[in-house]
Length: 303
Image (cartoon, rainbow, N blue to C red):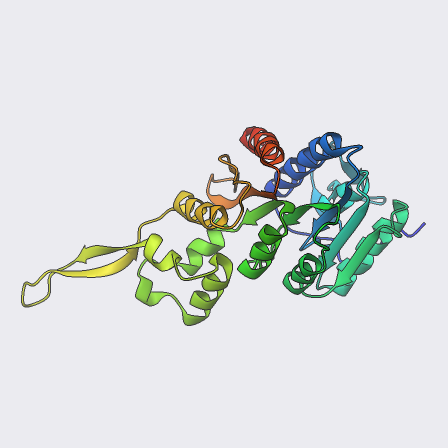
């Protein structure tokens, strides 16, 4: 059995939110498969930043976790990631992408263990390039459909990838928006945003609309001539950032965007991420159903 070794790239980071986001996506996959059974579709699960399929953490064993053999004083748990959970489900095809060789080796081992290696395309490379290529290769009349999980490293979920998925008309997409990191990039004063961060924000949001939607002119202390002055200051919180991103999604996903957001917070209650959902489908009925299911799942309390 091709079980990956512990030094083969298992994630050793993330808090409880890592489980909450994975559970939300897994719950949607179950509903999606039940709804689309016996419809003749070739159903893909696509994980754009798949990692190794597992994450090493500490705590007490719960459903969906495996105890590491030889664990010492502190209980060590191997949490099933999104890709590994999906490999246990009845999708016809899988596309799993990561740019780290050790993590890709882990994914291949998991696919073999699940008996799905012949169904899984596992790519070591750039997620955005890979997903854009997959979208462009879809035949116009094909029966391919996909659920896509975009859980980026930082702000690596480039808008060109999100736009390509929207244009397919056959993708249900979960996106983890890194609200805390985006807030760090967006300094209080617009003029203080680092040029490198401006470029990354443009790539994430697809244009520079964030600079006018999330920043507003604010009065500042009068100068020596007592003439009023203003500067562009960020007025938006994490909620404002999510709202703007969802508006951007609505501009390209004809099937709609979830109203609910699964907020993932740290122990102090600070927003770390927001999990959102968008659907691209030519069938209005299918879109309504997808949004209803996603809103139900994202609206449930985590845990």
